[in-house]
Length: 228
Length: 228
Image (cartoon, rainbow over all chains, first blue to last red; front, side, top):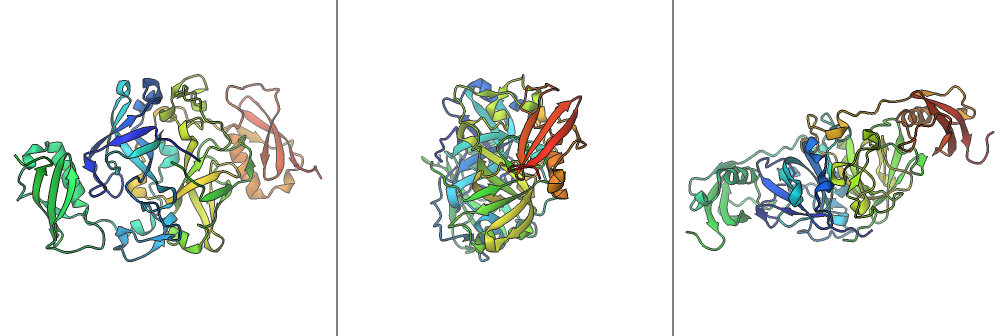
């Protein structure tokens, strides 16, 4: 089946490094769903104001297509060493590369065909193939067992901004979202080198950090062109 | 983007007439997700036994592709007369024809590559493009507002099997699922003619019924070849 994007996602997180590993983990992180023509008309969103969440069906566009002989993946939640079936995981390495996220509606600008959202785990530029309202009576199962995700919750890192350099260029709400992202440990899995410096791109800034003893220390936050 | 089915759905409900309008509405209705090659191997489902629900991303294969100039739909919940945006509705008439359903796991037969499920709103033969575990911490929002679905719940019909003819050919659990389907009023929307006879195909039987004064009366349940 051939499918075409109906929208594109805008996020301060560029590149896959730093994208939250699940929706809702960085709940202050702002993003925008921008409808593409011919869907970017006011009536396409009529009635959405009565809902708190939407579903996005999207493409893991930054990940290569899986090798279909690989039917198991190693979730970061399990430390990166235990294999589970691809259909028992939300891993981006999966057939058809389809992502699924419930995101909170922060506001609707129907005239521009834009839905402002919070907490999305989509990188900037991600193509979106469907948008559906979140219907609690069918979609919410608060008592459902969550397999390996139940007993292996993330232990958030403590985030230390002490040595920040140009962070005053970020707004307070951007800094809050950045802290949420960093607390979720955006390092590639299987890595634990306290000396190693990591970087991610956020809101047009290069953010450098290290992690040691469950504390993430921000070394610098520099605008991509130059530090003032 | 081109996507290929990873599985196919098996349901006693053939044809789109009688398919529940949302997952969970007919909670006794049994179905099977059958993985297709090369995904039908035991390891693809490893770890799924710890989850209670899965997400299915599937194709509304019985519905024609929407006319893209039609950005609004008329949900049955609103009586079929009020228009809402396609992205504010779970209507099958939508761009890319992608369906999304959370269904309860009833059992896993990993050796055959089969997941037995309950309450699905997929018709028999529906192609499935992804299977993901339901992760409550990210997917469940029990207090979310559900727009027009909050205040317009289905009022189930009373189902009267009195005049049933060959219904003894269905098992008790099939009859229970059939009653759930019928109570949700499977008539095409916008129709309310107490004299009119309707039919649907269920578990190899032709089920005929009428609806008057919020009571659905089953007229006959005949095997598709012949009534014994």
